[in-house]
Image (cartoon, rainbow, N blue to C red; front, side):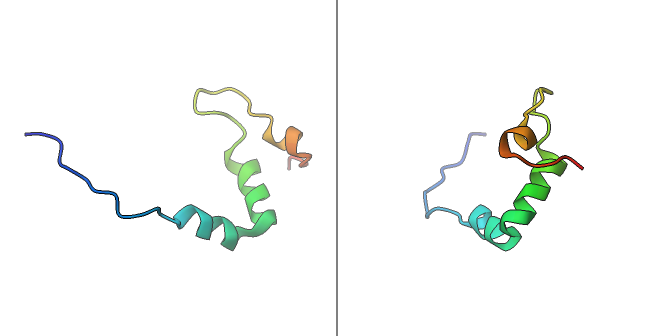
Length: 55
């Protein structure tokens, strides 16, 4: 068995659509909920650097 061939069909716009739907407030809430630590466990300081108040 081997790795199948894939062809480029175009850029996906799922993330752009999602972020537009969320709006600025939704993105900031997401940052506070999900992005406080990096994948390796370090503090991201995203709230502090963005001027957001942690809830």
